[in-house]
Length: 142
Figure 1 (cartoon, rainbow, N blue to C red):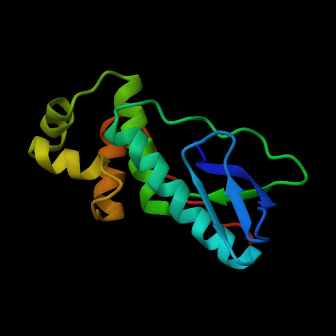
Figure 2 (figure 1 turned 90 degrees about the horizontal axis):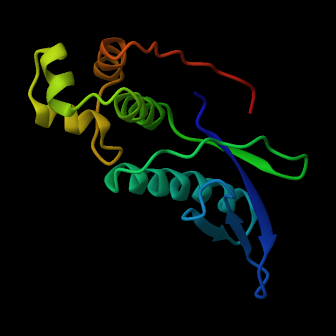
Figure 3 (figure 1 turned 120 degrees about the vertical axis):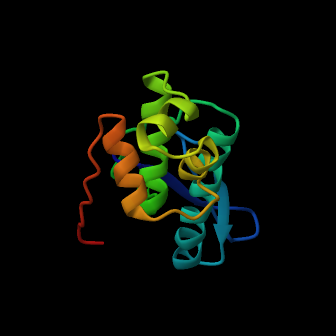
């Protein structure tokens, strides 16, 4: 799963740019210019998706971007956390179940799925392996 979401950018009545995400309506931000608006968009998207995790909701699937939309990718560590959270939900794996598979505590698993808490990518890779997923990092031109 690639967590990269299309966004719409439009000026508001004051001339500032407003960024919205059709797939994640909770993610709204803006800026004085496109550089600032897009930088803040990544933060707004990450925060909104963290809210889905905290509310125990399914992470929305990104739609295909139209030619007039920008695409904002979620940072790599948060992508891994969202993938782990989604895999656990889809397979009905509890924090205790995964903790047992990893030989860890449920609180350490909770940290791995919380986008607001720091985690090392190696820990996330191990947890994803334990739920039958493979972490693949893809680098593309900006």
